[in-house]
Length: 51
Image (cartoon, rainbow, N blue to C red; front, top):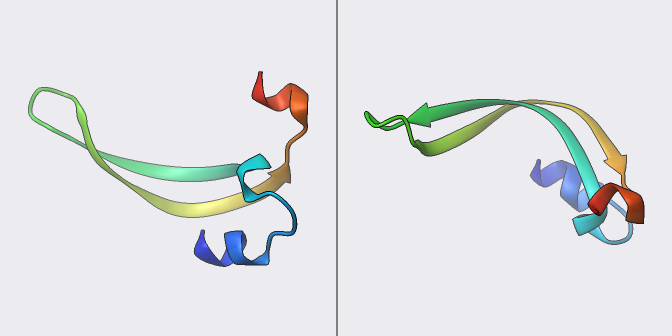
């Protein structure tokens, strides 16, 4: 992810990431932590993507 963010041009907050994620849950079933395992695509979003 860091590599993808550093390579991005323009506003990095407008990027959409298609990723695989592992989520660690507490005993109560609430998320404690997550780990990105693979980045499939980085897409530049437009204004309609963030509504």
